[in-house]
Length: 185
Image 1 (cartoon, one colour):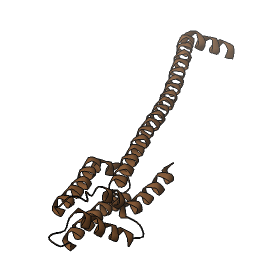
Image 2 (cartoon, helix red, strand yellow):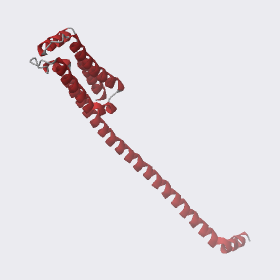
Image 3 (cartoon, rainbow, N blue to C red):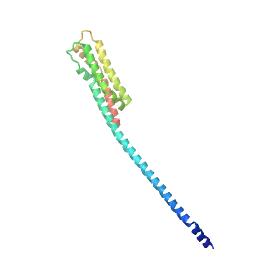
Image 4 (cartoon, rainbow, N blue to C red):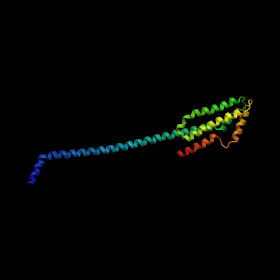
């Protein structure tokens, strides 16, 4: 009798049970594929992000290095010893000498001002101090000279100031710049 009830039940509901099982298998397969696709999609996204970041870092490091190079050139071009060599000893007008040197410093600075976004604030502040100190020294030398002073007098006064300094403001900033670059590499 039990067999008869079971066979009767299968005969009536068997098709539905088979369809239900088949439907469940399809749903589980679909969910499994969705999870697999989601995992692969996340892995691809993660891989793309890593590639993008490494490209950006590569660009960033190249831009940073270019900024450090340009600022090195700026500091070298505006170093007091180099500025001393710019003085025309035959020039009679010390205002013209002062103006030429300050114009050189400011032109170099303005050309490189955008580099501040790639370097530390500490380094940029040292570069600003170097520029300002050089301008201040040049102005104070000119003010200390007599009215009838000439290029030779300006040169000698500037050389005396440099001889009394242990190092130049540009060299201090350049040393800091080198340390910062070494910490990046």
